[in-house]
Image (cartoon, rainbow, N blue to C red; front, top):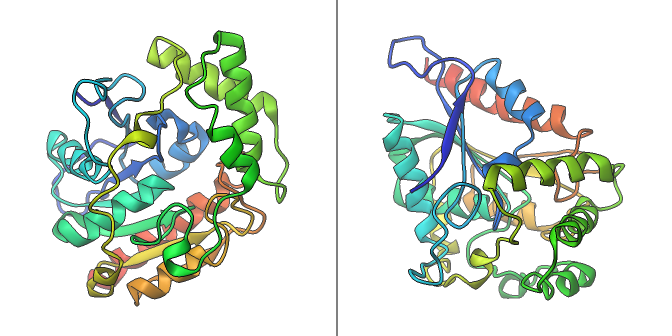
Length: 283
């Protein structure tokens, strides 16, 4: 069971109705990690759907009983489209969500009007990027990830998550701990408990070594580069854009691996512009 919500205009099959946007968040993250300000900005022009991956938020938590591959989460995105009766959508993926978007581009290109990826790496590069000679995550993040499954009470869990966001945010834009504490408090309330999601870190990574296939992609694709990303630092985005071939790339100055208040508008503008450009080219 997957939790999802639709915001903005109603989804309609009428000619001229705005096409929906499907947001796919990163590993171990609820759909609520997409900031309301970003969703609202996108929803000014499109119906927007965000959802909780398995083992996050209000979706089913059952990894210990029914383990799965990371690649299986891409099929969940298709199931969400099916549940809303959507034939095709503009699909946006962040971090692991960008990996899932790449799998959708390869396996379900007929379901994507456009693809947008941010803060991600190309299929086949692996977490450390070693397969493509790319830099790996910041060592401080690697150390913090070692603590992901450590037992914590509610207050220490929130503090851990805020520190995680601080490191993810990087130093290129201001970090507001109050903003991210409020986000995590809302996610915990939404979920119903404060256990740290970690299933995706333990999920089977097989089926992701498909980077060579990206050259066959012909869906209009945008890569948003976050120059201060401590997880997938440059030149990961450039490598992904070149792997796809016809992909465009735009840079959001100062952006790290977090959607803080200062980057919401440029990220939203890039997504909306990409969708509008693709729509105009087919009309």
